[in-house]
Length: 301
Image (tube, rainbow, N blue to C red; front, side, top):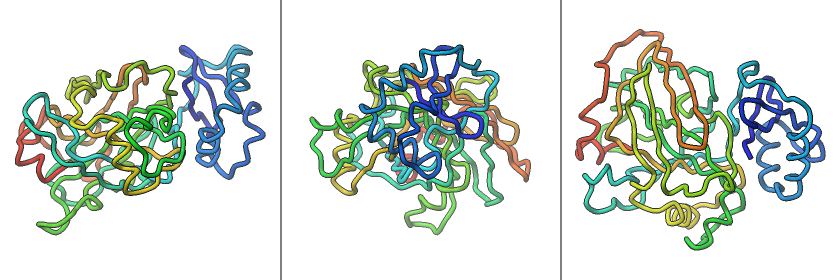
């Protein structure tokens, strides 16, 4: 099932090129605001699944091109992002130790929205295409073999990053990762039953029509199950939380004013955002080869 919010955060189910209003199917779910609704629905999904399917199977629905899609998870309780979790297409011989950082939920934007580059004097702003795992069941100190039962679904996630900000020789993830609009996700949330093998999914990202990132989740240094188990050892993950599983840095490049960014993970739809920069700064177009350098990856995510 593909779940989405549209227009004034109406809950819908996407089928083909149409979206179906399923508000009545979830009217018994107590909630305050759209994210409270989706997180509670995730937690209680088995109780509501048949009603959702019935609602999506009735009526004609609305063409997707006639609605405004919103972020499927408007304000997660946590966005935990993995750092250095790819083998970089064979250039990393040994997996780096587990590492992660928290990204502000206030940075979430959805399909068709705008990534606003701040006036902060970063040397460059990068895109990082990532597979986002959506937690479906409370996870605390779980084992890798228990991971599957704690996963609700998957979402496209772009970890927008400002490089080179913050004090030198210190942890600067908050400086570089948590600006407003730096967490695009969408266009919808896809349940696990629709993704046969999340550990072998092609991930692509284009900037203004140019293919930048093109890799597979099979290149992860630590498996999805291992990663979720590790994260749950440190903090409790709740339904609706997002675990972004990292990126392959080989195709990173600069983001700048007017760029049209598209990201697609096979089976998860295509996420589209526009970039705006009030300062109209310019950087070289194309792939930033320095981002693929091991020295760069040691100090970035």
